[in-house]
Image 1 (cartoon, rainbow, N blue to C red):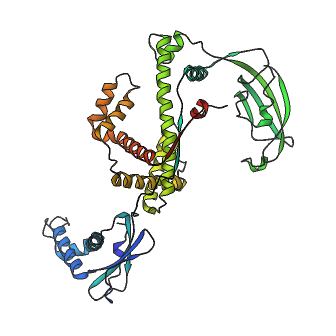
Image 2: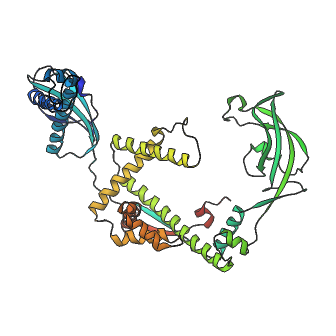
Image 3: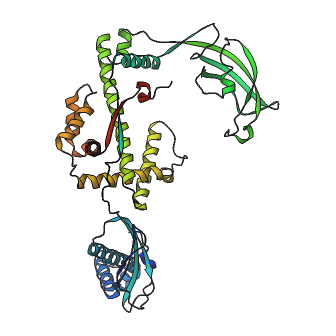
Length: 449
C-alpha cells in the first residue's frame, strides 16, 4: 500500500465514522478509524515475537530484556502494526461495499480521530461499470484480395531487390545506383558541423539527403567533382541551418549499378529451398504470401472493429491502470531497442510517451473482457489449437512446435488472447453493417509507389 504509516498522527480527537465518498466517476474516498488499543496489542505481540529471535551482545537468544527490544525495534513494530491495521480496515470496507479496486490506494492520515482511535483516509480508483454499446449502426469494411500469379510475381521482385548486389560502373549515375562520395558543406565560407563526410555511401533517389542535394546525385561519374547550393528547410532540426543556403563541394569516388539475382536454383537455396527446386520455391512463396495477406486483411478488419467498440462505448479508465500499462510499454520498448544493439544506459524511455496508446489499450482490454462475459464469447480449446497450428505452419517441424506450446500452459497465452479477440471481432461483424470491397495489393502490403 502506498502510505507512510510512521507519520500518522495518533492524536485522540473526535470520532470519524466510516463513509465512502465518490470524488469523480472512478475515484473513491473512504474515511475510517481503527482502535489504538488493537494497535498497541499488536505492537506488544510483535515485540514479544522479536524478543525470541533478536541477538544482543551479552544476552542469550530469548533472554534480551523487553525494554531493550522495544528501544531497538519499537519503531519498526509500530510501523508494521499500523500498516497492517490500516490495510485490514481498508480491505474490510472495500469488501463491504463490493468495490472493484483498480491499483493501490493512497493513504492519508487524519488528525480528527476520537479518543483511543486512529483516523485515516484511503483514496483509490475503481473499475468503470460497462454496459456494452449497440454496434448495429456501425459500418465495417472487409477488404478482399485473392492472391494470383501477379501478386506472386510482385513478391518475387521484392525478394530479388532485397538480395541486390552492386557492380562498379563507368557510366553516369541513375536512380537506384549506389554511390560513394566525399562532400564538404560551407556556410558563409565556413565549414559547419555535420556538413562533411568521406566515403559516404548513398543510393540515388533513396531520399536520404535533402532534395537539393539529391538532385545533384544523378548524371555524374566516378572522378567527377561538383559544387552546388543547398537550401535547408525552415523547420530543420539544427536551428543555425534552418532556411539557410549553403555551398557543397562533392567528389564522386564510385558509382555502382544494382544487379538483381536471377530466379534460379541458387536463388531458391537463398530462400531456404535446400534442393534449389524453383517450382517448390514458388509454391512456398505463394503459400507464405497467402498467409501474410490473410493476416493483413484480418488486421484491417480488427482495427475497424476496435474503433467501432471505442466509439459506441465511451468510458473513463483508471489512471492507475494507464500508468501501469505505460510503464510496461516503456520497458518493452527499452528491451526491444537493446535487442537491436542500442546502448540504452543513457537514453531515457519515458512512460509518459506511451500514455495515449496505453489508454487505448486499457479501454479495449476492459471492453473486450466485458463483451466476452456479457455475450459468452469465451475461448474454446479447439480455437486455441487452431491458432497454435497456424503459428507452427512456417516451421520445419510443426508437430514439435505444437508440443512446445502445450508443454507449458503459460505459452498458450498469446494464442488464447488472439482467439478471444477473434471471437469479439466475429461477434461485432455479426451485429454491425458489413460491406466488402477489393483492396490494392501494394496498398495492403505497404509497398512504395
